[in-house]
Every structure is written in C-alpha cells, then in structure tokens.
Image (tube, rainbow, N blue to C red; front, side, top):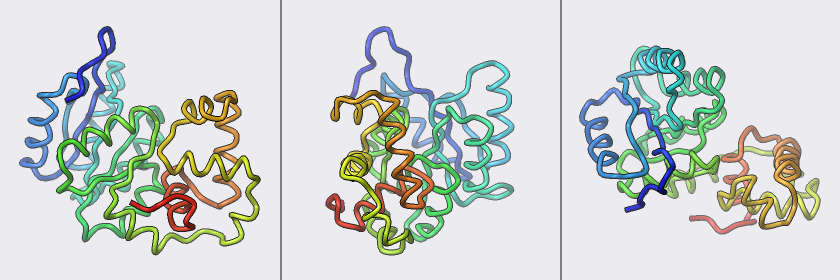
Length: 224
C-alpha cells in the first residue's frame, strides 16, 4: 500500500458506473488507501456532469474520474468528452468490459487518459489513478493488445519523425510525463511538451495514449 506523502492531499477520485455494487467495491478499496479518496459518485454520465457542476462551484473538482463506458441516459464516451471540454484539469480513466473494447478508441479520442478492464486487480486500479493524476498514460495490457491490431495511423509517420522525436515517442509509450521526459533528456519541460505535440501532429494522432499504442504496434517498444 502506498502511503500519503506528509503534507500533501490525497488524490480525489469521482466514480461513475451504473452498477451500485461496482461503485461500492471501488469505494471500499479506496477507503483503505492513504493517498486516494473518493469525492463522490454517480450512476450515469448525466448525473456525473450535474455533480461535477456543483463541485466546480465549490472549487472541489476531483483529480481523476473513473468512467464506465456503457451507461443509460449519457454514456461514458459523451460524458468524457464533456468533462474534458469543461474541466480540462480533470483526468478521466475509462472502465470497460472486454466486449466493449472497440469503444475504447472513441473514449481515447474523447480525451480519456487511459482505460481499465472492470475485472482489473485492485492494485492496477490504484496505479491507473495515480498515473492519470501525474498526467501519464495507463493502458490495460489485454485491451492494448487488441487495439494495437486495429489502430489506424499514417504508415509514413515514423519516417517523418526526427531522431529526437522518435526518442520522445518511446518515452511517451513508456508512460512518462512531460516532466519525466525533460529530466531524462535534459531539456526544459516546455521543450518536451513541444516535442510531444509535434509527434502527435506528424502521426495524425489525438492523444498520448494513441501515441503509446502506435509505438507498440510499430515495434518501437515491446507490447505488454
């Protein structure tokens, strides 16, 4: 178990799932962790947006939303897009069953920072929350393998990258944040951010998560 660093506040998580038993299970797990706390929960995307609007008024928005993809009224993809547009500092991690894996592409395009299978081990759930809070990518290995087979990106993209940009891409695929990349390559964080933006643009990709999948598919980093 990871203990909370003295003087820092816990990571605030908001749970969105239409199954009450799933929400109870995640809440019970997070309750025993020092560095993560559950700020609230909702049974569908519409209710989640209503709750987040109230939290925003009180300046109490969560750091990370765990978002089920398949829900009534407003599904997780639409809710993710709305959250990322209205509250860009709030990260979203998609929760999916294996049968919904094809929906993950759309969730990533909507701005999700990563995704988990609903039967993931508790420690993987907490790892995904911590990674999202650091601005990093978290990919469930099972879904990642499935998605890398279907990910569409310009084949000429790799040749368009400079050696430094290929280096940046590998680090992104390893889940490194801009700060980590800057430290590893001894460059400024602003320069690292610019390089990442250039890589996404050249590859025609919408997110760091898609870049990580693309790098695995192209063999630049080993698959999980």
